[in-house]
Amino acid sequence: MASVAGWAAASTQGSFPPLPRAVAQSFYRRMRAVAPAAVGAIERDRAGDAERPFAETACGRLARSLDDAGLRALGMWTHHRCMRFYDDDTRVGRRLIREIAARPGLGWTADEVRWMLRESVSAGPAAADRFTLPRAAAAHLPPAERPLDELPPEVVVPRQRRPG
Image (cartoon, rainbow, N blue to C red):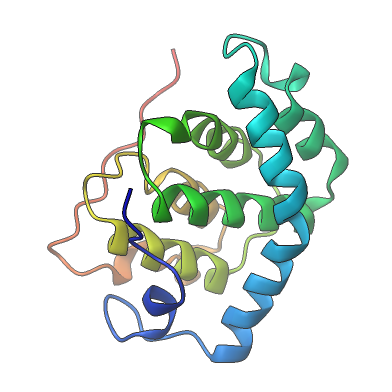
């Protein structure tokens, strides 16, 4: 398990200009607020039945308990964790990301999407689901603010899989 993202990805020149330190720090502050509950929920779900409906899982109960800003922070934290430590044991986290990505109207900002995209690009193609949440969040931004067009040409964003 290798670290592939984090503050270095958020603060270095690359696909996107670095975010202002205060903006990135506000993201980390919000993520730290949900991290203890997220770790507990993910650990409980990893030990439980993987086939349970999401609403009946610890992650589902946590997601239901949060407002939109809290849910965005949970999504960003889970995305960060899955990109940073991408391995076969992130299936519960990836499920949580897919569930958050499917929720409309969370009020994502362009900076939040850029931050997730930087993490996704830093993770590289081995992290197959790395664009799930940033792509879904970007779709809720006004067209002029969608940062997917800012990706360098060598970064291929896979098409979303259709449910079904």
